[in-house]
Image (cartoon, rainbow, N blue to C red; front, top):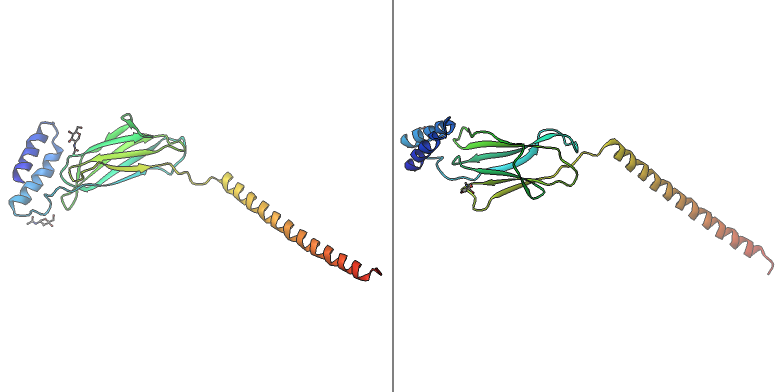
Amino acid sequence: KMWTIIFFILYDSQNGACTRCIIHLKLFKNIMTGNLTTNKTIAPEVKVYPELPVMLGKTDTLTCFMDDFYPPVVNVSWYKNGGSVSEGVSNTDFYSKQNLRLQMFSYLSVAPESGDIYSCKVEHWGSQDPINKFWEPEEPPSTSEVTETVVRAFGLALGLVRVAVGTVLLIKGMKHNQNIRRSSPF
Ligand SMILES: *[C@@H]1O[C@H](CO)[C@@H](O)[C@H](O)[C@H]1NC(C)=O
Ligand SMILES: *[C@@H]1O[C@H](CO)[C@@H](O)[C@H](O)[C@H]1NC(C)=O
């Protein structure tokens, strides 16, 4: 385990900024002090959600949130209707949590249309298969739709009243006919 971490420090320091080194150094310290609670491979929990309430055709940002994983090695990719998307994607660095596991965010700028299916695919050593999370825009019902529903419900109620009135008239008519027949001399 210690060698893995030393490897990661060397590997990350080649990438310049080396923000991940801090995470690894923390872990290194923990291992040296006998605190081995977090050096397991743990797959992220993944969630996909929009930043704003959905408005079809309006620009919004989808977030792919990867939570509680270790080590800091992931591949994130976005898909729209099954096709890979690379434009409008940005990834954050890894954030270290209190328990020394990590969080990371990937963002995709979108203008969702009805019927679109977006997905975020996350590959991590903690999961044998890639983790796919799907998102579809669901617009809250607009006022015009609500009005339409009310009008339709009203129409249905009116129809029922008509049927009821019709039935009453029919029964009355039948009784009337019987009375006429009864009172007829033949
Ligand atoms: C060991 O790790 C746990 C959880 O991260 C932490 O609360 C605790 O203080 C650590 N112990 C030492 C000796 O570093
Ligand atoms: C990320 O993708 C590369 C290239 O496809 C692959 O070699 C590597 O194993 C992947 N990493 C993970 C954690 O799946």
